[in-house]
Amino acid sequence: MDNEYNTKHLSEVLKLFKEKKKLSDGLNQVEVKRAWSEQMGPAIEKHTTKVHLKKDTLFVRLDSAVLREELSYGKTKIINNLNESLGTALIKKIVLS
Image (cartoon, rainbow, N blue to C red):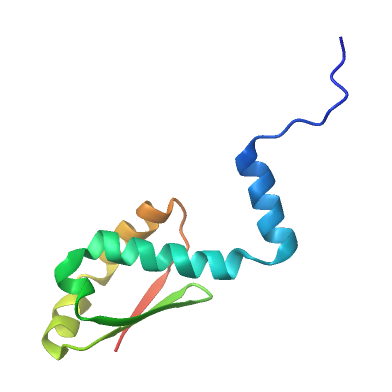
């Protein structure tokens, strides 16, 4: 018996919907903020005042110069951890301010 319905996984349908409605940027912003909070933990989250993704660059504003300096040494590891949490290589660069 032929299946006359075009079947797709829900994840495929959601991806197509996001692309069609141009929702990806907004959803990526939400996901990046979640990943930052989850990966960096409450101590760093407490000093984070803004997290913003623009194209493939993550801009993070911190209220501690000492913490900013400390995190700058581990940018590559932070990028890898965030991308792993996001399930895609969304972030290529981090700018700490």
